[in-house]
Image 1 (cartoon, protein in one colour):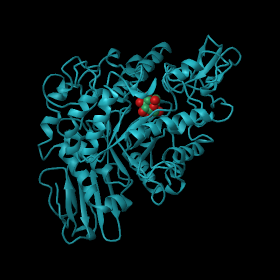
Image 2 (image 1 turned 90 degrees about the vertical axis):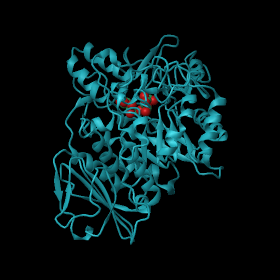
Image 3 (image 1 turned 90 degrees about the horizontal axis):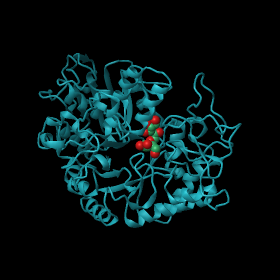
Image 4 (image 1 turned 45 degrees about the vertical axis):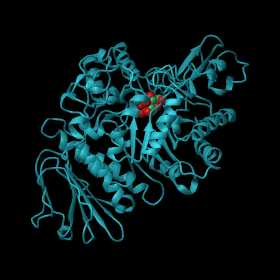
Length: 561
Ligand code: TEU
């Protein structure tokens, strides 16, 4: 399994209020104790930090905010010494506008690097097409110096690279090789399915009342993306013997495309992050509008991905990352009574599936959303721009605030909660983003040695994956898919069967699992006093009760609860 660190919010060693490499080094023990195989580090490269490091101005240096290259090398050595691997974030759909490549590109139309970015003339005095930026407004910005627009799918300070240009691709390959030579073990590739845009950059289908519209189908899984990834695999990894990890972050990717990207026979990527289950309760045209949570839809979505990549390709499994609200507040129940049980139950149904599980910092503690109150509480540029856009358009400010509180990326980015004391032990200074007040009781110190904690449950889930081949290889058959409260499925290999079942609600439920499971053994439960065997009267589940049973072994060596 993979553990994601968002360095800015993980641990601060120098008191400037921003997490850094020194802080990570001090806290590696926590990650190791969880049983982590691979660490994925969100960007630590030199960056103006407009999008917290997803705007890179030098791919071959560490931002002074986070430390130095020498510190990075030390950290990598220590990660390896502990038997873990380290994966870097590769952000190459775009650079920062302060990257020397862009500075040169914008300097004149004749500059050799002009074609490294996407420049276009105005169309009838306005933007070249109707594409919206993910961060509000147009995806194009006018540049006075040379009298053309440049493309940026994200912020205007994140210009898109032109992947059609072989020199750009070569520069990216060289950068990757440079990090592999330093010893890193692979890459998580930011929006990598956006690198090939549809020829001619045609308008997206208009939406009434919107000047700029989401144009996902004009650049997601575009015409040459598979060629580019196969080429990258050949050029960067082809001559190396070691095993590397590649994960493509892919908003809008379909199951059919994901199969192509991750089929080992095609040699592109190991796995992709898909987003279908992350938009399940968001309105289609506005991710900040809550459209109601439908557990059946959520289950079906993930089960559909399980089926689609069952015999070719490979899934990644995640509830959280630095762009998503906290799962216990989102799909769980963060009330005092059910907070721990629901955090564990959601961990259980995710980690029971086939694929590689990812845990985002603090998820292993059941960290929750932040109690945002006013517009000033938000610092993420996506949130700030969204709020401004709603106000400018005369929209409902209260509704916008409620949507942001629920879905804002800042929910994921509040500092890691280490201790009950000042600033949760994250920093001795002033934290760059407020610490969640619930750190007084929700923190690592309170959990790591407590056998009943969310942390202990995650550790058990991770240990199970290391011990039970059926969790890795077994196929998956959903049970009671239409049930709006029970999430259950069976994993099976030739010799073993595993039943994963969770009651995703407060009301008690009894389910009839059938006689074949009466002999099964409990390997993991999330509530005290879970009986060791299933009763003949059925499986009686309390609120947010989650269990894993195994069958087909005489005895199970390492029983964990
Ligand atoms: O995110 C890509 C992406 O499309 C979304 O998940 C994004 O967070 C946004 O909310 C869409 O509305 C990646 C990174 O994970 C994110 O942090 C960056 O801001 C983005 O790319 C640009 O690099």
